Each structure stands twice: as structure tokens, then as C-alpha cells.
Amino acid sequence: MTEEQKTGTEESFISHLIELRSRVMKAAAGVLFIGAILLVWPGPAAIYDFLAQPMLASLPAGAKMIATGVITPFLVPLKVTLLAAFIVALPWVLYQIWAFVAPGLYAHEKKLVVPLVVSSSLLFVAGVAFCYFLVFGRVFGFINSFAPQSISVAPDIENYLDFVMTMCLAFGITFEVPVAVVVLVRMGVVSVEKLKQIRSYVIVGAFVIAAIVTPPDIASQFFLAVPLIVLYEVGLWVAPLFVRVTQKPEEAAD
Image (cartoon, rainbow, N blue to C red; front, side, top):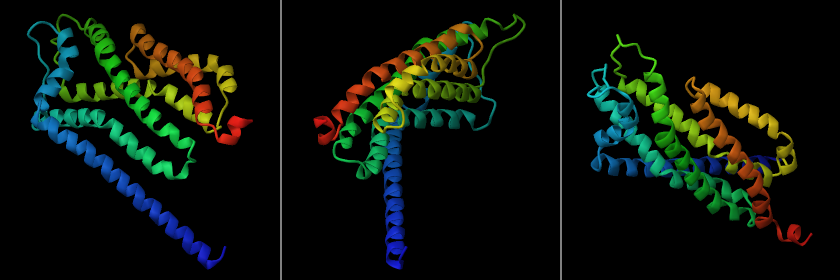
């Protein structure tokens, strides 16, 4: 490699780093902007109260959650607000990721950007909503049903937040399975036929993942494993459609 080629490679690498920094800063600015709005309305306390409803509904009447740290009542609602801001700003964050990747794509491949950004955002939010509205109530009811009468159940708000974030992230990522299948097929990493052949392994893996991530009750595991399997099948059905839509002109002619 000549000196000029080395210089050009270094300049290209530096320009990519500058572009990456710019995209990261724009994504972070979008999250912080939404976070600032949520701090004003409805406010961190209201957001945390909404997040705590599934747990409070499973506790005895009049029972409340507790905060064991001195600044925990301030930090935990603030963390929840930032988490909510990230979810709301997710389309903007995903757009910045795809915008960083887009210059290296062909014109026909850039057709994927908008559908994938929209579908990724909707699927992640759907996974979080599915977890909050359908799974949490059953999970917390199951856990609290094992508490002896001699114990007063009063969950710590920080531990509760850690558990909720883990569960929401697990379900949000699970609902991204169709997008992952589409991207892998379109990039030529694996074919739809191969993915169909490993279907049985995916089913077993779904239940293994559900057993690791969710609490030890069968219903919660099914709530995670079954959507993962169904969404995998959806990805297998959608992937060929995306491949046809984003084909090169010469590929389409062939």
C-alpha cells in the first residue's frame, strides 16, 4: 500500500468516526429533548406511578412500595423518565443508526431504511406494551401469592425498576425478531430455506431464553416464548417480500 493510499484510508476512517460521533450526539440530543419535556409534563413522579401500577395492583389494599436509599426517591423516577424518553425517541435514535449506515448502501438497499426504522420502533414499543399490560400483572400476582402471611410485602422501588427494565428490554428485543430475520436474509447472511430448516431449534431456544429471562412460572415463559416463535414465522413470511422490493434492477430482470 502506497503512502497516498494509507493517507486516504486514515482520512476515511477519521471521517467515519466524526460521522459516528455526530449521529450519537444527535440521538442523545433527541432523547434529552424528549426527557426535558417529560420532566415538565407529566413529571417523573407521575411516570413512575404509572410504571408501578401492575405491582401495586398485586399488593394488599393500602400497601405501598418503599425506598431504602436517601436519594432513591429522586433518582429512580428520574431514571424512569429517561427510559420513557428513550422509548418515545426510539424512531429518531434508529434513524440516526440507519443514516450512519446508509452511505454504504446501494440505492435499492436504501429503500429498507424507512420501513425498518418504522417497523423496528413499532415492534419494540409493542413488546414493551405487551409486557406491561399482559405480563406484569400475572407475574407479580404469581410472585406475591407465595408470600407467607407473616411477611409484609413492600418491594423496593430501585429493585422494582431493575426488574421492570430487564423484562421490558427482553420483550422489546424479542419483538424485533422479524426485523432481524429480514435483515439477515436481505444481506445474504442466511437464506429463508435455511431458517425454515432450523425452526425446531428456534422453538427450543425460545423456551430456553424465556426460562432464563422470566420469573419461574409457566405462564410468563409462554408469554415470551410464544410471541418469539410467532414473530420468527412472521419474519420468514415477510423476508422474501423485502428481498423482491429491494432487488437491484439487474436482479429483478433475472
